Image 1 (cartoon, helix red, strand yellow):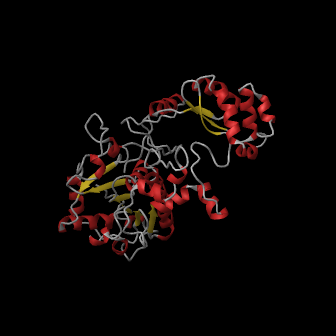
Image 2 (cartoon, rainbow, N blue to C red):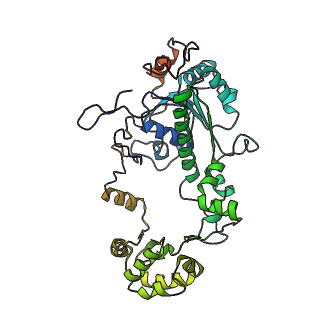
Length: 411
C-alpha cells in the first residue's frame, strides 16, 4: 500500500492499517460498515460477491445516485475492491479459500453454517492461516438462535429498543435508521482491531463473534442497567428522558425545538433565558429529581413560554447562556449545520465522511464504491498465480514480518 500524502504532496506515515488484507464476505449493512471503517484506515478490503447481482443493497432503491447506483450500497462500500465468486463452483471456491489463506482478516455475516458448507468456517481458515482474524456477525448468536433471521427491525422489536421508543405507551416505533446494524458494525470493527493488536504479540489470529441482539442490549446502556441492577422495566416516554428533566421536544413558534437540560445550573440558565427566574426556585423544580417527579407541570410552564419565538431564535438566544437546545433539523439542516461548524461532513466523492479524526494518519478516500466485479480480473490473476506458503512453521510470524503473506504481494 502506498503511504498517504499531505496536501502539499509530502509523504507522511503510512495509514494505520496499510498492508492489512481483509477478505470481506459480508453483505447488506453490519459487515460492510465494519469493513468500510477498516478500509478508510488503510486496509485493503476485497469484497467477495456472488456474480448474479452481488450485495443485495445494490438493488435497494430509490434513492439512486446520478450514475444510477443505489445510495444504500454506496453508503457503506467505499475503499473496497469487488471480486465476484460463485462459491458453488469448485474453481471459485478454491479461489475463495486461497484468498482467506492470504488474508489478515476474514469477515462474514451469513447465517451460521453457511461458510462451513464451502470450507470457509473459522476452523478451516485457522488451520490454513493461523494468523487470520476471523469475524463472524450473526443476528442471535450461533447457539439456540442460529436459525433466526437477523433483520434490524426484528432485533429492534425483540431486543427492547422499540419498547422504549415511540410517541407514547402502546405505540412502539423503530429508529429511523438501521441503528442496530450500525452499532454491530462498530463493535465488529473494534473487536477486529483488538484481535489484530493481540496478534502483534502472539502471531496468532482468533475468532471475533458479534451478534445484533447482544449489541443492542449493551447499547441500551442506562435502560439495560436499570433492568439488570434494579429490576426496572422502562416503558415508552415519547421524547422525554426517564431520569432527566427538562429533556424533551417542545413546540416553538414555527417548528419543534429540543431542550436538553442536564443539571440544575443549566436549568437556572434556561429560566433566566425565558425571563422566568422564579421557576428555578419553585419547589416542584428545584432539583432534577423534583423536575422529573413533576415533569408534566414543568412541560406546561416551559411550553407556553417557548411558543413565543421561533426555534432558530431560541437556539441563538439560549445557547450562549449555556442551555443545550436546538431545532429538530431534517438532513439538509443537519449537514448545513455540520458544514457551518467546519466539520467537513462530506467526502470529495459526495459520500458521508468518516467521523474519526487522526492527527497524523487520518481516514483516506482512495476508491469509490466498486461496481460489481470491477476488480475481478486483477484479483483472479493474483489468486491464480503461484504463491509461496504462508505461515512457514520454521519461523515465528510475529517476529518475522517477511513471512507475513500480505507483505509486498498485494495485487
